[in-house]
Image: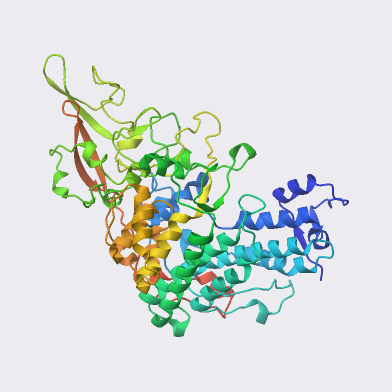
Length: 591
């Protein structure tokens, strides 16, 4: 049977720009004989696979799910309960119907990858090296899809052939492979394709041998964690023997060290000021030595995202803003630059004790000052305000208190009586995510962001290395130097003694708001402890203009809602509908 493929608008646009000797059929269906004999069409097919890959969350109304994973990890949430990263995250306990907003079952995407992998070698005209590299890219994207599934469900069916339309039930009703088999498949695929993929991509955004090594680093670390901290279930369908942990840690260590020692990457250090350096790390696309693989964006050409539009603080001209509040607890993870803990005695949050912002904020980890909007933070040539009132002494010597965002304290340098409403009302936390924001994004225009989204960067790979080295007993003797002379030195932070607790804290700080923390909690098997029924908090700030200090109170952070992550949610349900569709699927425990 000859298969035909419906070509998307992206595909059509690329084809129409080519000088190919054929005509589109009226229904825009093109024979596979043409697709896999033409370099431009083959590239367009592969571009669709890249476009379908789950690199960044962009679903939900207006793309609001871009903050979804950070919300699940209790790093932040969205502004309003009607937004997915609030209403479908906080207070939601997934059940037998499936993984809800986290569901991901991309076998259509995997089938398209399988078609590409099968058909490309049959080409009679394409260059063999071109074929080999493009197949390797498709194998990476297929493995990446399996990684996203195994994080959610454990073992899933591994399908590496494109089943025909008239496939038998025996072929269609595929049973689940074990979690171990899925991880081993991902790792073996990366090993197989590394030598085929180029050192440098021929088109920015395509995978290279270093991207394959990065996925190996991450996937092996996840597998090791599940082996060490998880429990085998369903007769081995879920989990690993604990004895497998060191083998996977070694794979993660080797893959990470390969990138660190042999790859063309280095930690971004383009600015002397560690705060500005960490800000620029996420918006500098011209001289960024740290990025291994990024989802590319270019809003003038039609591909932009809404991170800046959603996250910009209120008061700077963006009509839709202040959507990503973060919590007191997240702030507390960032220690002070002298090494003292970031979690201070909460008794000072009594609404009366003066808090010096130059100490409380200005002396914290530079990564906090780069990543979180806090009261008085410099921004766009002025400051971000989060206070709900200002006390001051007027010209008559009387103490006044003002709560208006439009009232400017007499004689001040523009200090308002209160912050803009969406920075400090009851729906927010008076702390906000700033990481990955472009301070210079024009207010006018589309409002869409050009900034790329980093899926893999060297900072993560170094932390993967440190974690694997720790559990292996530091076999190369360089764990401390990677942590203290590289990661923390770049951040402007003092050395630390490496423990399991400090490794985990460092990941939550260095990788904050980058879609890692939630998955880390799950693989470490501490998500129940960190998330299930655990209340987060918000600040109320009041400012005393006369002494230049704040007072603070804290309150519950999520409008009375509390996250849920019961033990069974370490493996989400496949769902009643999938079990009904395929009688050979076995449901996960507890559903």
